[in-house]
Length: 370
Image (tube, rainbow, N blue to C red):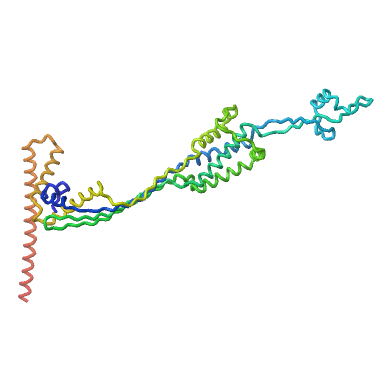
């Protein structure tokens, strides 16, 4: 095949009747097999938990608390502590006085006992308690759902068979093609730790938070979980630790039921549409390319004209201001150079051949004389 021949040239220099006959009588079949699996995982929740958990730990180490006073009238011998409030209560309730001796000493039968106890049952602590419960539930949900790195698997294969007739010529083709694209993102990996390790560690940290005295106390009391919207108390608004906790709270509320996005397709079918039509065109192109092997069916002069046309077009593209005479002179000059070069080369080759022939005959004559 001549240099310079391209796909366009195959069509231009092929018989129009041949192309029409081929296209009219082509029969083809195509089987397509598709396997597509795309997973997009979001691990923002894991990053956020890892960042926030230390601030939650700070809160639990220095929790809000308040004093609860429990007032109870008990027998004197059961009283743990007598305070000013106990004396005042006895003065108002003289029926609790059992006896007064000669020295004026009062002996009560019962007295007010005040028990003072610290309590962690504050709104802020219940908010953190609820957040920890939500964190644990969220992590367990993620463990049960699709938990893997984002990836794409795109496998395609097809089989194409076709036949056509041009005059008495039978043409057939069989083609099998496969394409495989597998990509994977390590977006679940961080600081050298894989996804499974990070999830396991965050679960362990949550267990540690549940082991703190504050969490245990609130769990023992079965406190009511807080519900959104969260009250904007001064502590929650101004304390840095609580600000981080609020960010995590809001994220979990918005994304609690999020699952990894997945697109999956397994399809095997016979294509009868545009794709098969494109391969029919490719079959025709392949046939026309094969026809160039037959010099009787392919006009080599037209191919040469195609090459010359392309060369002139490139010259014009480089300098569109050239006139017709300038182009003729330029082509003529280059023609003379190439022709003279070829002539000089031919003369050099003839001299070399002549020299070797003379040397050969000299050796032959010398052998005869011996």
